[in-house]
Image (cartoon, rainbow, N blue to C red; front, top):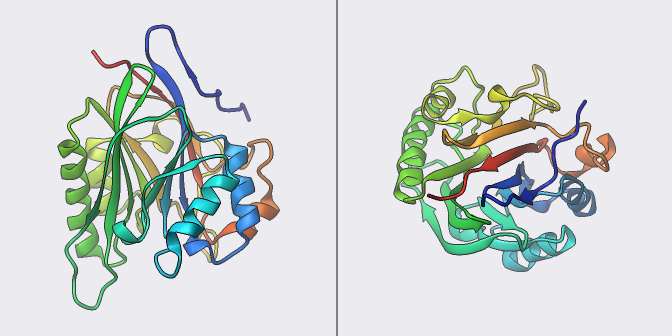
Length: 249
C-alpha cells in the first residue's frame, strides 16, 4: 500500500495536510498506545471524539496532546466530548464550542469548531460525535452542515463518529453536500468499528468540494502504527486523510 504524502506548504500558498479523526473513549484505555498511534500518523489536525469530560479533563487532554507533539486547540467538556488538537503549522484565527439541543433521556452532543490557516489556505474545522438515535442524528447532520457554512471559510473539513454506516440517511445527507474522503480516494483500511460482527465504517472525514483528497482510510499500513496499539488504544480505529488545501483567493 502506498504511503500518504507528508505535510507541506507549496510556493503557491496551497497546503498539504494530514487530518486524523479518532474516538478515544475518554482515554479509559492504554493512553501510551493511543499517543503512539497519533504520533505515528503525523497529523496536522486531530478531530477527537469522546475526549475526557469530567475530573481534570483539561489536564488529561493536554497530556495526550503533549505526548503526541501537538497542542489542544479547542473542545472537550465544553463541546460535550468532541475536541480538536493541532500542531504548530496551524495559525489559529478563532475557535468555538457548540452545545446542541438536549433531548431528554439522551446524551448531550456538541461540536468543536475552529478556523485556522495553513500557509495561504484558510479553512473551517469541525469535530462531531452524532447521536445513537436515528431521528436526532439526522437533525444533527443538518446542524453540522449549517455550522460549517456559518464558519464563513472558503473550504471546510468535518470529521467524527457518525454512529451510522455510509448507507444510512444521515451519512448520505452529509455525503450529498461534502466529499466523503474515504469514498473519494480509498486508502488503508475501511472499517472503524470492529468490536462485533459485522464490522462497520461509522467514522469518517468529510471535505468541501475544492479540497483535493489524496487518500483516506484507517492507517493500517502507516509506519509505526501497529495492530497491538490500535487494539489497546480505544474501541474505535482512527481515520487518516491527506488533503491538499487551495490557497485563499
